[in-house]
Length: 323
Image (tube, rainbow, N blue to C red; front, side, top):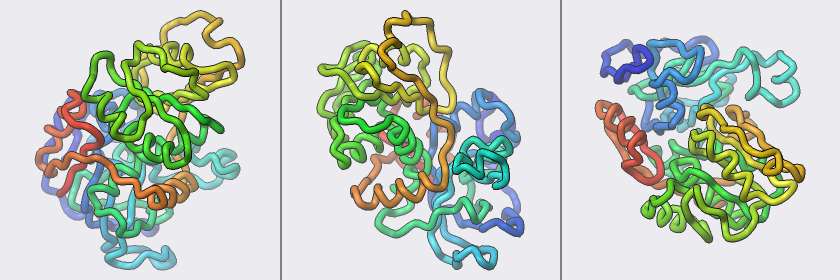
């Protein structure tokens, strides 16, 4: 499924199988998760995307070919995340901040992604996956899970956490946080009773609308919904010294708010991409916690219907596309 330009629908296209480069693994795709970032790519919100492009950056599949020295063998199951390549030599890469590399290339944005039968990926950015989850349930871990984990890391040492937005990332982070002994409060669109029930099912001790205050002050809040107005709302629920972490790649403008809401050494910070360290740590934690996503499956030819469903909030948890 090819996205030819911003604003277009995806087009089902016959192509030759990808030719892997000298450092690439050729993968037979089993499943690929749909992420809100794919919506932003379709809407043209992310600069520098190499249209036409095959989107999809939560790839799970089996190795067909792998370069020597990669440690990967045919039929090995691997996962491919958003971060698809970095230079390895800049100051960011050298200090373990490869997620900030200025030359980074991203799966489904600069390199063709996983909404296809085959994909090629840099062997350095392929995570070996066990078989404790099938491909469909493993796929959302590769971005929704990873970005949630990185957001939690940047939130600091917390006992009480608020999660704003209960799509794929929020629904995966909540049970992980509970597994770590954190009390989780869930925030949805005002009046979204279905979403609030889902948040409670995923381990939240309280769930309400984003226009509500939590019943107790939060140590940190993580915002996954791409709505800038949630930043000042979250600040009002965070204790002095607490943090508000913006976990999305794109967000509408943040409105002005009184300095008093920030005062008291509260902090606002963003999350950019992920690192391979994040991936290794999170996948181990997900296995330890027995994390299993809530998924809705769409065949490859119905990718546009999956995009529409995500925009409309038609399902709980994550959408996964299978060839």
